[in-house]
Length: 266
Image 1: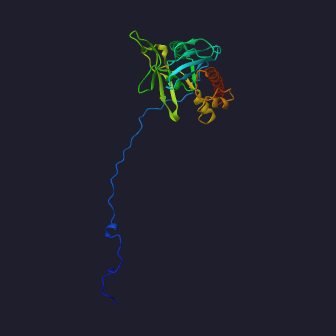
Image 2: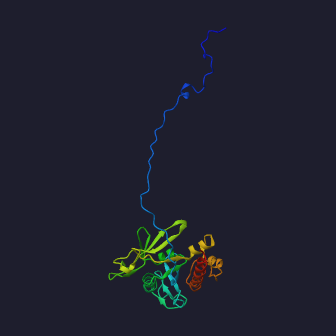
Image 3: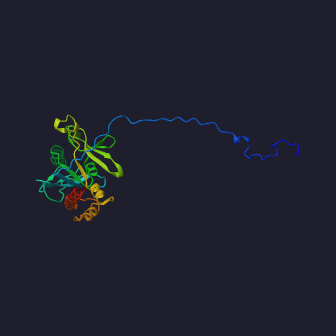
């Protein structure tokens, strides 16, 4: 017996309504594919060893970060007896910092100890923090602060003028707060300035980076790094005029210790 009602008339309704059962139209999507240029990557080869002859330097700064006085030592064949002191750009008149060797003017130090040996003779340069070292001695900065101008000449009109025939010190930020230091381009380079088609960039080593890499943790203080590598540590804290002799001696011993440790690695 039938009730006479249409089939499906009493079927429960979808509370979402009839629109919810409709299929939505597809959404158009545009894909953009970009391929890398067909340029082969630079071949990876064994890196050149750090020079056996190096200049190690340290500077004591004032409250404004400018260098007051510094000290340096040589290391390597024929350089173990090389050492001296120099006057920074912020030094008071008649300052004679403690330590061994003669006292050089800033111009004399930059020319005779940095430019000629480190650039001309391809010595290595070592400091606790080379970027901070050269920044404290800079006359001015270019390229948004990434080029430290340290080489200048007297200006007959007064003051100093940039020596474009000697390279600026380029400061390139890297990962983990590190700053890579190199020589920048100079005006009218000689053929011997070129290495593999590029002007010689120099060989600069940060003992803070070396000690941190070899110990597996960031080392912020020279005294701490010395203790990690069984080197007689100088007083903790920043360099001062009074601690320069002990710090420069510690830097040379730390350099020797970290170099020996690094050469054990395959």
